[in-house]
Length: 435
Image (cartoon, rainbow, N blue to C red; front, top):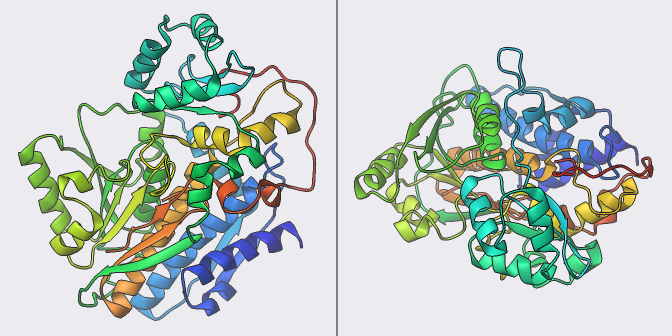
């Protein structure tokens, strides 16, 4: 099978899992294929398929509005570049400050296992330093980690609400209780969770003109979802809070086409204001950990009663099942725990793990979340109801999309690897090792 045919095959699987009209696939044109980025993993294949799925879903909404079909064309090289969009962002011709703090990255523990610390948010960094009992310089952290066992440190940091991941080989991850739990989920699901009358697809010059979206997400995956919906004409309002930290480059890169507001959900009046906004929304996308908004009366079922027909999209690092369902996480951590970083190090010939040359899990999740949201909107137009849609292959429900983060949980990692090998020349690992 050619690389282009493989990407088209993945698109076809996504489309069939969503239960959409297969005739639409004839209007999708995918060109090019892997390898594009220096990785053994088929990043361009995943990029082209997920971006095409979102584009085709938008085209189907346009068909419902206008009765006319549109062609969707995606080039693999351009898609791979889109999966690194934050790297190409420029402000007045200058690169904005990077996302990675020097303390973040891989460390060798005392049992010779590797562990990744994610310390880009100040409170995560300060918490990790408290647990380790050291100063915030890399040499001090290196020495402190070297005194600990990787698995015990991983669990200890997670128990403290912090972010870390022990590097595992693919086979080791497949045997982990969290991987086994996520493996019980279907790759993609769309579930009706409430009754509501059908709502017309709307009017306007673009597929999502008139659709109101509340974006309660941060960093990459959720913002890419909102950015994609805005790109197809939706009115997107980003809702964040003064006390929540943000990474400037991601805030800007994921913010195109959006307006923004600040609400502190710890305040009853702000929480009520959010409920008012939700009563007038068509789509809500949130990336709080599973159960966090439900504790404030904002579960998908709550919102299906508050706003019948709502499309509720939820994103989380490890999914909504298993012992890790409440753990905090990021794309790079999922790469570390699931075997992707291990395989990257082997392929690169480095003494240690190496991340993908793109945060591909986050970007794919964002496009698939937008895909799920648009499929749910199309179902609402045809059938009515509130729906929940979910994927476990790449990340996160009515209409909600609930995805788990790693392609390693969808199929064995080699199925996502190219047949070509990249250079095994030894390289000096950096603090963030390619992410």
